[in-house]
Length: 79
Image (tube, rainbow, N blue to C red; front, side, top):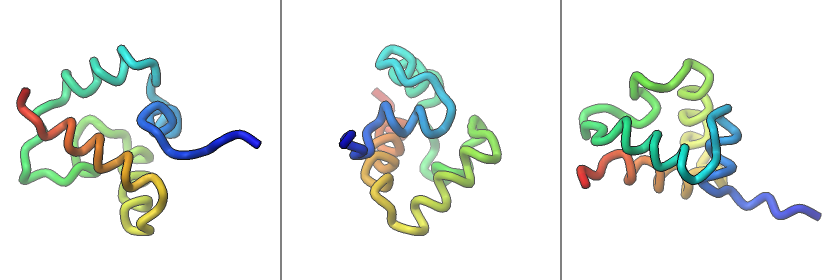
């Protein structure tokens, strides 16, 4: 059976984004720093379906939350 533990790669796949490590790094670099005043799901770079996915997974406290929080932290960092 395939291991379906959420990862950053799987999160980007789930949201229909490129999931190669260099794409993920480029995406984060292009969109950071995300101001603290903007919730991750409200960031202007998400499509409506991507934002809804983030909101629903956070609300359900799903297995994705750990990876979503890692993405959130990466987008908040200035460095």
